[in-house]
Amino acid sequence: MSTANPMKLVVIYGPPAVGKLSVAMELATMTNYKLFHNHVSVDFVKTIFEFGTPTFNRLVNKYRIELLENAAREQISTIFTSAWIKGSHQQTADNLRFRIEQNGGKVCFVYLYAPREVLIERVDGKSRQDFGKIRDADQLKEFLRSYDLPKVAPIDGSFTIENSQLSPNEAAKLIRSHFNLEPSKKPATKVI
Image (cartoon, rainbow, N blue to C red; front, top):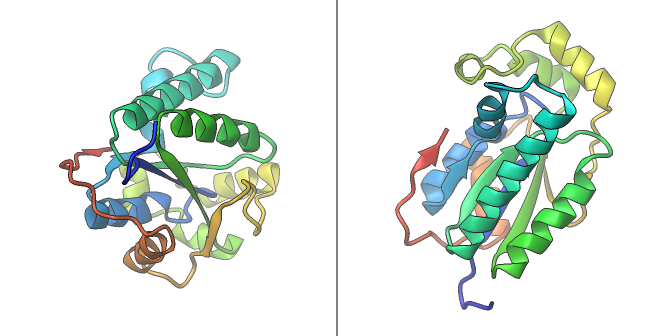
């Protein structure tokens, strides 16, 4: 399936407290793309299954992929946010890219990172509380130790942004320009 202006899926990923959702919200405003926040699928599956169990992980991945694949099929440009966990995402990214492209879309991976001290400074922000995210500095430090988050984008073909000195709006403008994101003609509704 080929179209002159294909559906675009912008995947913004990186460590907790780097500003993925803040940047995604700015980008959604600029482009009129739908916004699919990572915690929507996590919270949905967590209503029944324990976080981190094999069934939980399988269902979260299944629902994310199905939702995004259907967005591509319907030509609905979308922004998706996600954390990256060492060793687990290249295969998922390749599968997602294949399924989106099979339905006429294009995937744009964006890796946001910042030094650990910046992440620790940001972890107790109010917006993080609103979404049930990690808000404790010690918990974040443990997460960062466990997952050894890199400065180099772990998914092939990613646009990398060091996000310690940029506002969410500035980072969103860089993404929009880098991928030449045209505003969507479909009305945006934020899914957060």
